[in-house]
Amino acid sequence: MKYKKIRDWLIAILAIILFYIFLSVIGIGCPIKFLTGVSCPGCGMTRACHACIHLHFKEAFYYHPLWMMPIIWFVLWILKTTRSDRWKPIYTWFCRCAVVVFLIVYVIRMQFPNQDIVVFNPTNGFLYSRLKSIIKFFN
Image (cartoon, rainbow, N blue to C red; front, side, top):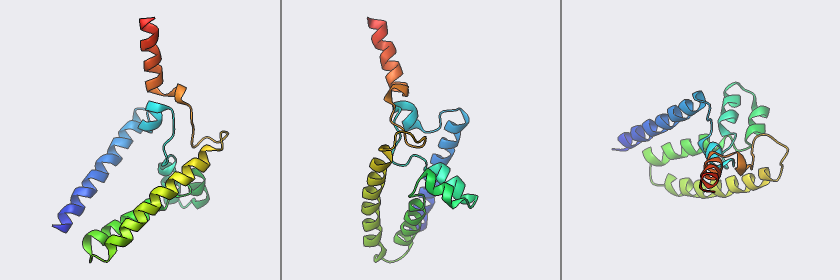
């Protein structure tokens, strides 16, 4: 049963990766930034992981300083799923701390408007432009 759960999760993760590859190929990239014009707390994570794969760790930290968190999360999740119950509280604690740390890093990164990783520009978002077109149409 545990291995079926892991397999299902791995299939879900693979589907998400394929979805993001598709978005990248058609030129959208991040769906959140595309729709809203605002970066999410994980913005730069894909580029950071790509840099890490090529052993460019300084570049990985530039793109997202928490690039190693998903790796740690994945290892803890596997341990929690396949091993004894002693890993569940560690996993829960890590997830809660990770959310807080991601939000803190996000707020800090948003304070630097001259960098190109995390952006706040809602007027460039798809939803804003469509809403503006609809309002213009009715006026």
